[in-house]
Amino acid sequence: MLVLSRQRDETIVIGDDIEITVVDIRGDKVRLGVNAPKAVSVHRKEVYDAIRRENLAAAQVKLTDIVTAGGATELNGGAQ
Image (cartoon, rainbow, N blue to C red; front, side):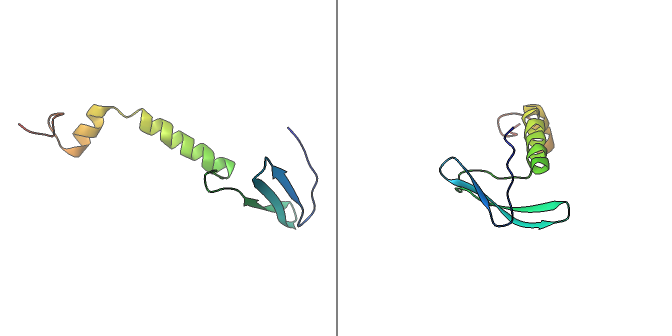
């Protein structure tokens, strides 16, 4: 892990198009501003972990669970 010291209003650059700026420092909290292309997802770690857990859980759902939840009785659209 690279560890950098920065003061308020100082910036680090990642690659050619991501900038992280120290916006504010209050006690033991640091506010960071992130400037990144729209194609780059930026999340707090705890939010990112929650998204991953939800995606993994959704990937584990069986087709029969979806069909049953939708009220259909057959895979061909519920025709009987």
